[in-house]
Image 1: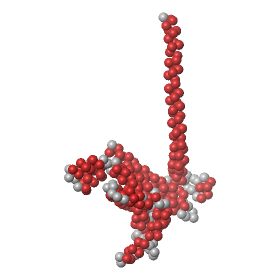
Image 2: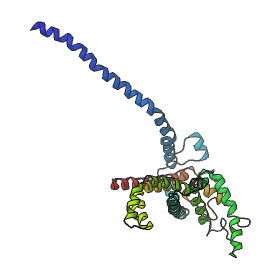
Image 3: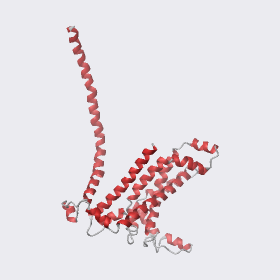
Length: 316
């Protein structure tokens, strides 16, 4: 029996050494996974986490040009936020931001969906026309904004020239407080339609054709097929399209700044342009309040993002 025990011990040793091999492999695989993740982590930290931290730090300290360079700004707590809330520009800027965002998204989505349904018919020249509709999206924003500035010019703009042909008085699109916000909204709608068209058109292609055939056999009209089939099945794609459009439109700066610079008399000022003007648009920049306004934009985007996540969970 002792001989049996002695013979079993050596026999079990190779099994033990073989059991350690998978552990070594798992350890190597673990480090390999981290090696692949490292570039993404570095990118997120360098271009997202650190800028967010710096913006938060700016909003909680009293920075001047000297302290911004030397890095010795005193801690001021929420004073910058109190300054922003007490500023008379806050109310109009918040209203303009909400109006600019929701009106732009509503028209971009509605027109983009209508065009997506139209191009889903796959008629002749459909692909060519879709490619032409992508031009506003492909152009640099400075080119698009400059083009709209020229078109809406009060004296030499093509829009007022067209109004004169139908005996309508010219409109001061960019210099009138009543029309400045409308002008930048029109330009932003034109730029954002192609994005909605592309995403929604892709979503329409994923809807099975036999569903429409069955509805047609049952006698459903085109309008009924849209409301009972297209719109419900397109809801997940529509939700992400609206969310991305919302986050993008909240932070639109270049279009407004090039066309009106937030004027006249703050008539088209949004949080994005106000933040820039506070931080860089004056001889004595106010870095703290400017960063505070930027953080308010981040909070608004985060709020709508959380609403989207909750909506998705309820749909699941």
